[in-house]
Each structure stands twice: as structure tokens, then as C-alpha cells.
Image (cartoon, rainbow, N blue to C red; front, side):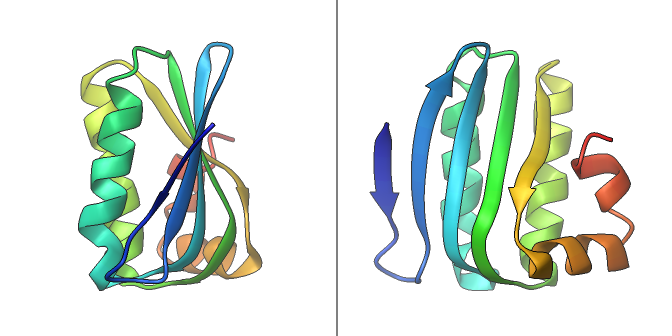
Length: 110
């Protein structure tokens, strides 16, 4: 497992390979200040050669529209590479924000 932290925001990550999937666990506040950091972390996961990237957002305490948009952009990047990217475990706040924007149907992989 690899751990990362962003000094400019309250966000941290843990990355682990889980068979055919790479799991990116995100903790903290996913706002406009953290967008570039999240995008870079997902890009690193996509480059690992796994068939699937699972975003564990159970530890996300806040997400704004910039965070939701970034998740969708990352989903499109993965799709272009024929890699499945989906949100796995997630906090209630993530579920509410993504559902309100209609992104739950795309990102939850259901």
C-alpha cells in the first residue's frame, strides 16, 4: 500500500493493488483545491495497467461540484483507455452529491 498526502489541502490517499483492480482510498475534503491532486492520483492508478480502478470514497467528508466534475472527467479518461473506473465504498455526502448531479448511475457501476 502506498500513502500520499496533499499539503495544500486536507486530502490524503492510500493506493493498493487488489488483483485485477487498483483501489484508491481517498480521505478528507474533496474540493476545488484538491482537484489537481485527485486527478494526478487517478492518472497514476490508470497507468498501473489494471483492468479496473475502484475509488474508495468512504473517508471523504466533503465534496463540491468541482470534485464531482473531476470524478466524471477521470471516468472519461479511463473509458478512453478501456479501463473500468467506478466509485466503490463512499460516504453519505458523496452519495448525495453524485445522486443530485445524476452521476451515481455512471460512477457507481450499478
